[in-house]
Length: 146
Image (tube, rainbow, N blue to C red; front, top):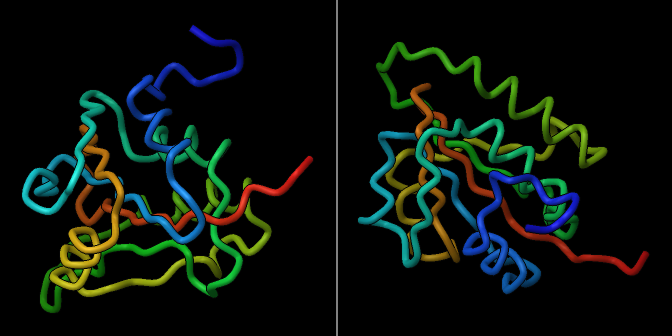
């Protein structure tokens, strides 16, 4: 164990986060996300929701400032009536760690989200999140000297 590290961040996940560099991406999938289909590497955090995982990661993971939208959400499919109140929670969490807040976010079509995960995510973190369209991609920024 280490002091100051949220216990939700497993040793395996911490290793992956440390190995990621500028512009690398990670996907946090909800309980319905086909992580093993689209992820090169999958880490399971069953029993945890996306908001608590997102909050723990952003304590140590800077978002990319070289792009306008370093956070991607899976857009609700046309004709689907699903509500996405969890997105507001995500925006509140991101605003704690990045001054751009809600301006960091873009929505991308479902299949484009899957393919972006497959092509660009270093890891897919599978959660036990039950909210619909709760999937999120984060693009890593630069860790600046303190």
